[in-house]
Amino acid sequence: MQICLRGFPGYIFVLLLSVISAPLHAALDIEIFGGGAAQIPIAIVPFAAEERLSQSITPVVSADLQRSGLFRLVDPGGLRPHEPIEVSYPDWMNRGASALVIGSTTALAGGQVAVRFRLMDVAKQTELAVYTETVPAEQLRAAAHRIADLIYEKLTGDVGVFSTRIAYVEKQGKKYSLRVSDADGFNAQPVVEYTEPIISPAWSPDGARLAYVSFENKKPVVYVQTLATRARVAAANFRGSNSAPAWSPDGKKLAVVLSLMGGSQIFLVNADGSGLQRLSQSAGIDTEPSFSPDGQSIIFTSDRGGSPQIYRMAVTGRASGTAERLTFEGSYNVSPHYSPDGKSFVFIHRNGDRFNVATQDLMTRQVQLLTNSQFDESPSFAPNGKIILYATEVRGRGILSAVSNDGKTRQQLSTQAGDIREPAWGPLRRLQ
Image 1 (cartoon, one colour):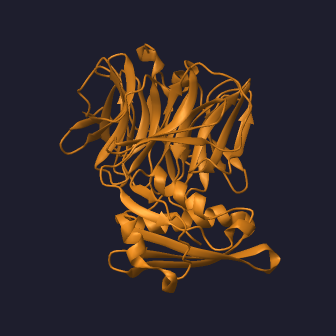
Image 2 (cartoon, rainbow, N blue to C red):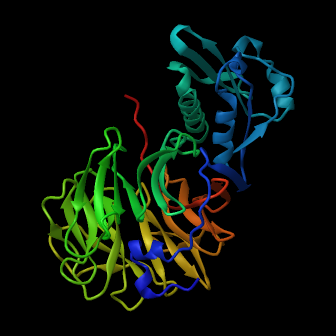
């Protein structure tokens, strides 16, 4: 697919894509390709008494760890220990397991379930972690994700992201739906649904709100919606187009792209729609802003140099035409997003006739191409920076995919039918 320069602003970009209507399914199917070179062999024994529950713990934990690409599941066979005293470490060594997960579930009164798990180091024959929680039966999947997060953190040293959420847009027939689901695609819930396009969802840093662009009034308007209450405000509803919202790290402001003063330029606005300030000022199109983690700068797409490239400029609260060009490989680089540590960014790079996910190190300027599909868009980092979520096409249908930040593991996440675009990975969910 050849895309002209006018195509890269977000709201027009999406309308160029073909769509296919289909029935909605409750969860995303996940297919995994490849794996890390040094996967951790781990055995997960089915939790005691989980077969009596409406939701088992073991398959959720296993699927989470396998999706990361960093773990190799070891078949426990007929071994069924549930307490440390029951573990015969030589048996697990013979099976090639480096780590062992055991646990139990106990149904309590009032629909509550007590969940306990232990993570064992097979070589050292020691306990690495223990976790106990009592949850309502309908929250067993959430408890399983927390267990997977703890295992991931203990064995890799990085924070787990299995308890996070993703947002995406799904189109069926004439209906557009902005949806939020768990990171594995389950528990998808609609945020808004319209017969006009919805694009560019962006999570607030606390995960409580979503900014997005809706065409419900026949023009692009940026809304901010509180997920718990569904209350929303129009954060940018100015003359002309309003698009591409990006949250500041403190959650108080949005960078938005407006044609209010002619052309598409980047502005700052408070999350309630007040306090408009112009940020960029160029003769070209400036769009797709992304804040640095410290809030001191933004990266964005601009054609000010003649072709769509990625630039960086300081956030000063006043209009400036000064910006540093960051990308020089190729004539088309768009849709940048900072990594959580601020050391790199992800973007879409035209590679011949393909549009692929790539990252660039801000210090060395080294570019790494991560995908080889025909048409990718809308990349965003997981909050631990280890995985990148993006949209792609398979047989003309939009699906979600994810790739590890080294390109070694790739996943396809899709419904059985339908057209899914515009993914955004939410922040870490903090325990209250």
